[in-house]
Length: 336
Image (cartoon, rainbow, N blue to C red; front, side, top):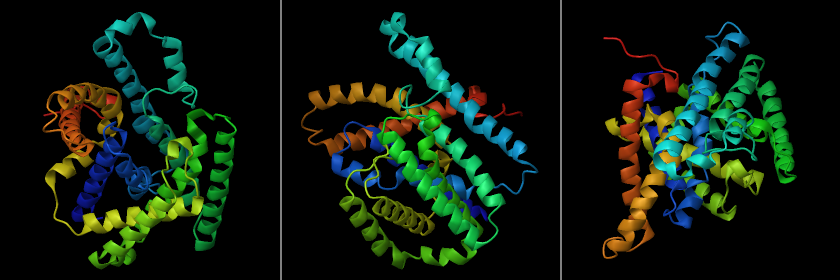
């Protein structure tokens, strides 16, 4: 993959995490959230598939260990750091009410009954990449890939039924089949990019975007975490067309350095934006919105300002972690 291609993938990652942040903000209007949730989490999984490379591993054990070190351990460490920051710095008044046992269960079990923050994505990503390892290793024909997709769709439907029955699976395992579909699709695109990128021409952008929006709006508000996908057909059509439109957009615009930078820190942005950054900004924005009513005349303006400030604070946290605590995200200290 050329450096140009890597750069627009990094920009897509940045675009995706910005949408995730906006989707978690309280001031983001409901109509905007409806559009964001059509494809932002699917895009995250899809991009993970674009960078998935199982061929370089000599065994499943080697692949497993690598993913455990780069996904699971950082998930645990970030959970601990967030819990510590909230308990001792942001909410010290509740320190005597801390439920350590519940927190430990939340990290180990990570089902819908025991959940802290929004790091469920990392648990699902880890499990889904393990599934995709076997799917890729043993699917050497189109026929086998079709069988895999059918099995994943059926498994996803079963997972949705289990969730609706309030049968909570550890590590949100019920989401793994649907996540695997997007990851596997990203992998397939990467392998066939030379052939398929002709469909990333600007002429396709408008019709592809329109299809995504129409299907997404007709399907009403979705939220993968809560298995709220409504029509499975409309959900996947809206999501994949939204992903397609995103690729068309970023393939045809100049490189934007700040987006490339954010794209390299999406793990940090994802972990800390909601429990830390938005927790602080929601308090600040509530005060500002109440005091400067002549400026903050609508939720759209408040949301734009909060999103801008959130990116700045997330970038500050990313700089601190990368320079001082890189082990939290599975990296080594830089040597000079």
